[in-house]
Length: 55
Image (tube, rainbow, N blue to C red; front, side):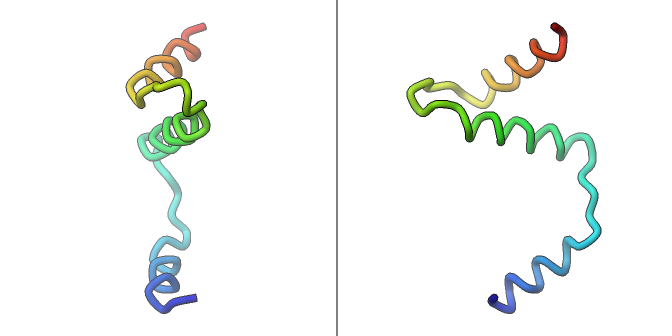
């Protein structure tokens, strides 16, 4: 492991994501796992997740 990577890992030890970071991670996960044929946008993912929370 490079020294640069080691330092980066050390700097985030013990970090707990806040609500905003968790939501960004959630959107990124859904967007990244969507079908490439879908041609969806991150904005569409956000709208879909918002609708799912309401239902």
